[in-house]
Image (cartoon, rainbow, N blue to C red; front, side, top):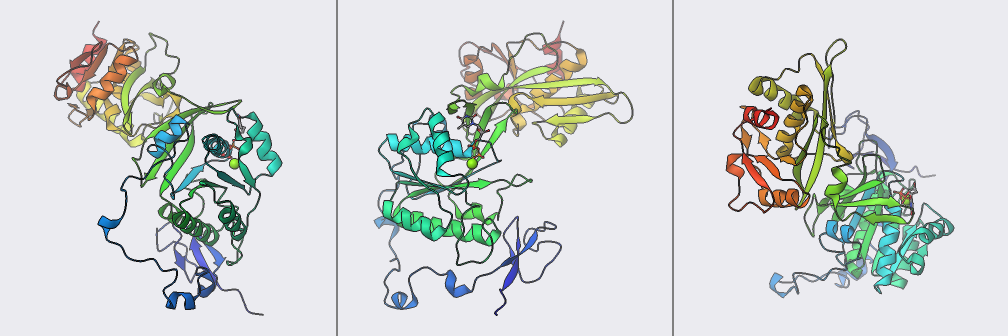
Length: 460
Ligand code: TYD
Ligand code: MG
């Protein structure tokens, strides 16, 4: 009996090596190599045999770019506004979209809603479920607001079978839930292993390009937060969306991390209800939380998520350390950034944190990555140290330099407009950031540095 040929694949980057090693030579991660069977090269090819190749059949012809029609292809709007927005204006025909997220976050739910809406707009869909039975999917569909009953369901995990049915039905959108349950018998090895996931995704990608069918792939997420299976999966697809919970509540944030047909870092906000996911049209309201006035340690920043301004509350608590080295705990803001801001406050504003535990939290579970949030974090910290609240109609926008100087940040008008819309009346920012025309309803208060900022806000 012939022995199955195997190789070692990296679970993180998909790199293939003949020998086992402790460290992946591709991405230098440790202990990520797993042994998997490799299929003989020749059976990996497409159905078109080499004789067809020789005659030129099935080989695409080169074209001049100027002869390629229509730069901007139409998009299919699902009508689920936040979903379309994150995609960059709807589904692009022939595109492949990977939807990643932890189990139970709502990937199946949102895709079923999308399928239902597409059917409602006379676009045919095929929903392939390898994780749940038809009965289970039906039960879910019954709970949704969307009329998902006209969605066609296929309970199948063999990729060949899926592609045959998809070719017969020729749906506008094909949804695969999930890519880790699909397998091709041409490769040995269980569904979900690196080789299988990569090969199945590549073949679905070819199918999408050849037929113009848009394909959605559900992908599970590993402990490290990556989509299980190879990173190469992210290179194969056109768009990668991550679905994550915000604040452990029913709020969900959908985020594009790669998009060949639109911007990245746009977010869509949803709330999980008894009738599926419902878009939250006004995310600022969500991330401002139930703000009660006069609580020390809270400050509001106008941050940008992609092209959209979002008002977010930052909370700080500085309390006397009980024993040993004081703690620095932050959720939603990089720990190192917090350390830097504490040092700046210490050195440039004369606040002392040496004996204090510092806890920092971004309301709503959002992750803030913009340096534009520096000044607000500093103000929240100062507010907690002084035990005096920041006036509730005040936002703080700006980056802090190591010299304590307040730096201007981009898109200031949009931030101010959103702040005014949400009822804020005063915005502290860098003198260089004050725009030509300040949106009505809000005052732009220029401050040079963090000391002045703290003095002005907490002046008797
Ligand atoms: P699901 O879409 O199955 O998550 P995933 O596919 O990402 O694993 O969502 C599962 C959770 O959502 C489950 O805990 C039940 C909840 N849910 C609702 O709260 N309301 C609903 O209308 C539906 C369909 C699910
Ligand atoms: Mg699911």
